[in-house]
Length: 120
Image 1 (tube, rainbow, N blue to C red):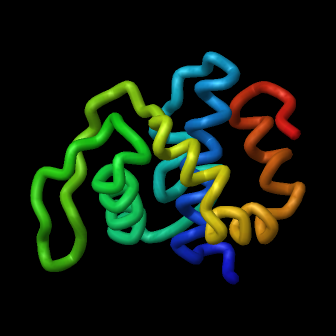
Image 2 (image 1 turned 45 degrees about the vertical axis):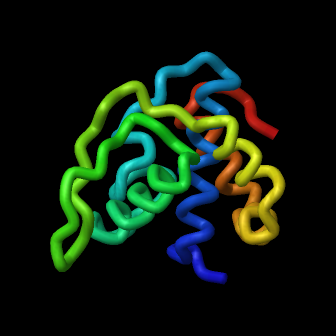
């Protein structure tokens, strides 16, 4: 598994949104966008990941406007939140568990700094 694998990116986005919910913090796009403290990936790749998470019902706060040949066009519809289905996927899916294991303690430190709370 690599730091830019789709499962790792999905894990980081879902985990960020879940921690925001648990700590009553408003999720900010710049915290989990394609160029953020959590990761750095191409914008089109990020749009594909967001589109999948929206279509699966794992997150809200985005609307898929149109698909181009390169990537889906995404509009924001704040607030950004993880859904109950997203939490279940994050906690129960074997791919998410592998991504969690791949993400080192360094990710928890970065996430804690972004959220502004201690995360274990």
